Length: 106
Image 1 (cartoon, one colour):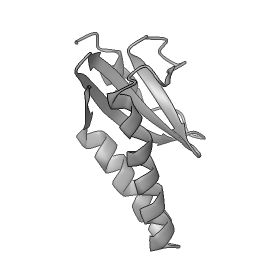
Image 2 (cartoon, one colour):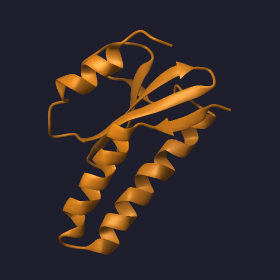
Image 3 (cartoon, helix red, strand yellow):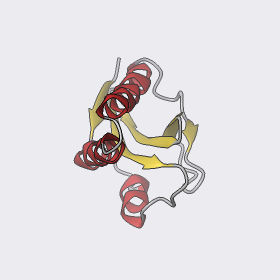
Image 4 (cartoon, one colour):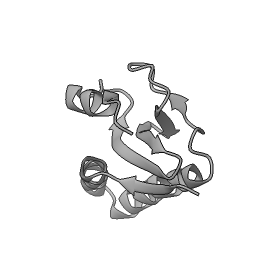
């Protein structure tokens, strides 16, 4: 089973999403955050479960869809998965995320 590691960027993204939703409802903000973490649990057993991120077309960089959000992750190796960002699907991916994801390390 692989270890799923949330990057600082991904945790920051989740915090920002929760803060935004929390302006209207702390209850729904909590539920959304819980959905993100629950969705990624399957990756430890099935790291290739998500589709390849179309903007990159790199086999190791994939995404899971949770509602209106893209959970973008990188399969570093058979033991490690990095959650890179959690991103609203209506927005373009940030260049820095794409650049970091496209690095061929691991």
